[in-house]
Image (cartoon, rainbow, N blue to C red; front, side, top):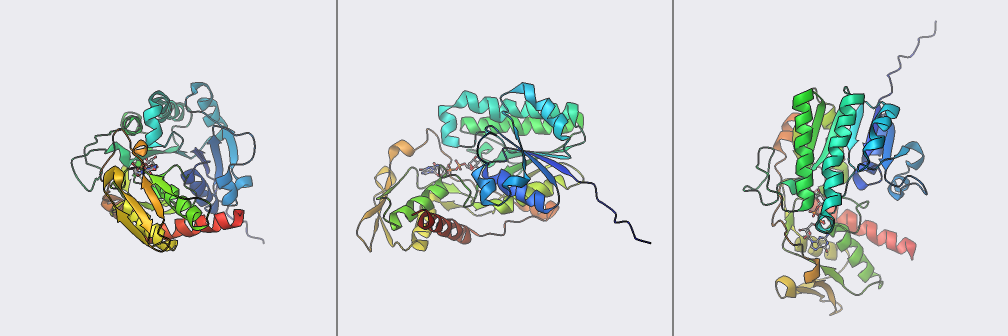
Length: 349
Ligand code: GDR
């Protein structure tokens, strides 16, 4: 007699902001694990999001329109998907832009989270919920490295909005028993990162100079230090949080920090430059010893009204409780981004 194969019920995941770097990697991870993946974007019509195309999963993610600033649609959307897991990755993610658009940032990154959590509480209270919190919430925190117990002191409209979102997530967990976790993620990069962030701006810019497509790269504060990890590592940590029996908050970080200038030096080396630095602060610039040309220049207009000197996380709790750790080291990360940009620009030429 033929044995009937025991079928595991399909798990449905809802990812808000699926067109972003993390959304795309997370969608691929969940598809590989057999999930049915629904993803929201603010602009669902037109061609499939380029990151989903790049990962070869464009046809496999069910796209839905959602603007977290719009309260009306969210409950209907949660009703339609009936998710087992919700990953809230939507929002404005550029710190510098949040100074120019503080109200929109608060509406989406802070109040939008209340709208979504309220819909989950009312329509899918059994679902597990992930909130994309950020190391920007620490701002000028009093200790380095920063861990889950470190007091927050955000210094940007983005950081303030994210802090609201973090605490409302904790509040829904405590008040209503939602399985809601907050991942406090430090910077995480990849070839899918937008060029508005400093890592891709550097590798894209230097690769262009290498190929004769640009003259110089303009940057802001070179002394800022960040804990840069690889996005695919961090996205795995998000999923791991939701597989825990109990919801909780976790820092995901590498535990190492480097300056923007360190990043420039390594990327330049990977792309065949030999940099010599001159001057300090806004007068700093880097010449390529081989060509004698100025390759990097500092522009005061790229400085932020307030910036964080050093962000470095302690991933100890995630290592102990989730078994998570950042696999890709800084040097490898820079190499991955530099080579990906060089390849992409050569193909486009
Ligand atoms: P960040 O990332 O603000 O840390 O937030 P970003 O790459 O924008 O900046 C890192 C540091 O580099 C300095 N910098 C510049 N930054 C940009 N974007 N462009 C420049 O030309 C430049 N020159 C110097 C910045 O001043 C800053 O100190 C990222 C985002 O992904 C957030 O959404 C996320 O929450 C945090 O990481 C963790």
